[in-house]
Image (cartoon, rainbow, N blue to C red; front, top):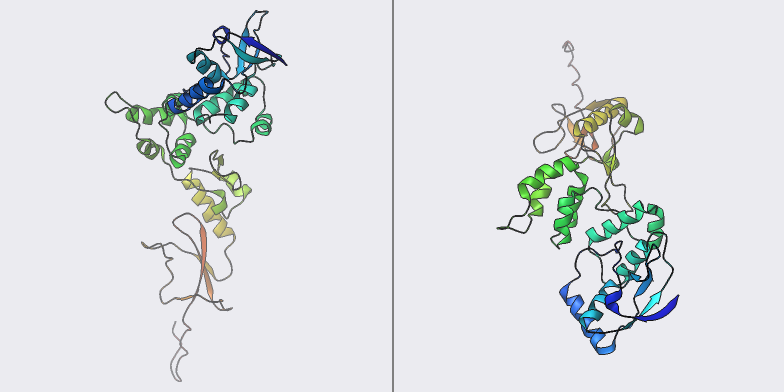
Length: 315
């Protein structure tokens, strides 16, 4: 590493820089004021121009160079380093994240660039300690809109990213911004892509029945890392597997029942629901609640009346 003094106007931008969207005017104004007052505190990092060029390419510090030019500085200090194999893409991303926070779209695009340059997600995770590629399934046109600062909330973003690109295209045609209304109604976009999700954490069946019913679990990239975020939108298959599990695991004196309009299990006529510990003579009912979970209730049937003396038993 070598310290040099150069004309900031002679430095060339890095095509692999992490930040693509403009930083906020407030952040730029603050940086410009700082440079005018005390100069550049941390010298930008540059690397020799590739292909035997005579100049230098900015590896880290594009905003500092830009504001130094705006401040009218004729010469600034830079740190010259050897050019990295990835063109400095990782260093640029890490350095930028350490200063003003990248918006989510720029961060994802920078990570995609690193993957294309041969970085693995594991290596990037170690380097950045951040959850990766959250926006990989979002339509590029939506990404461009988000990069302008028009972002959906986390719940809406999860719904959008979980939908297929074809579905996203169809919904985007209806809700993309116009000159009259430049802001996107992300709520409407998410609603158009909303599908009922069924989760393995709510399933009583295991892998064997899941495979038999053709259930393929999809990972929710936006869910917290400490929970099972898999899901399926094939509601019919999920409920079918739940029904078969109930049939296979029906206890003695057990029945499978439906629910009424209030979501309560339909018990046989004259049945008395047991809320405490069931007795040996009590019955069990299995049913699916409104979320598709298997629920269990116990009930008791009235004892058959003993015939009086001289009466014949019924039947």
